[in-house]
Image (cartoon, rainbow, N blue to C red; front, side, top):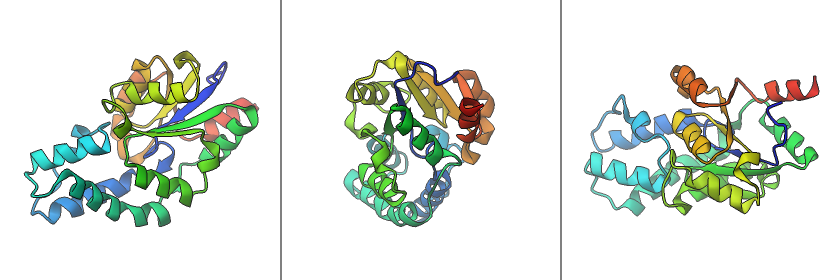
Length: 220
């Protein structure tokens, strides 16, 4: 029933479509360690939903980094590209769900807080680019999640009304962004945000552990 009357599906990327949140914690530890800092316990929640550029500003100001914003983003990009190309995999059932959407003629887009170069690396490596009509990063809009900007922009590019869009997200800020855009939101389980499951369920319209749950429901 969750897919009834839906004309478009919009996915977050990290932790939602691909299993990659583990990678970013490792990168943050290594990056901050090179400047003599330990990873603050609350850091991931503080930067949740920020665009790639907004996160760079946050890091530079909070840790007084002697780097330009461009340098910070390039270091992160260089650190992540190899992992995205060789270690990151799709979430369980994601490819099968993308096949289902394609067969049903339902449009698909990506709305991610990540940088474009990294997004391109992972979708090319996983060979999923043909499934998506639109790929948009939060650097292309005025404000990152939980602002609705990125979801509204992707829906506009897909020529879909917000009420006909289904959003998949793994973190509260992203769920809020989808809801504020007037869309139906399904939260997905992720090891990185398992402690936030209750909050995610309270914010989202649906919750799934993996995409097979949807397919099993549709096929039943």
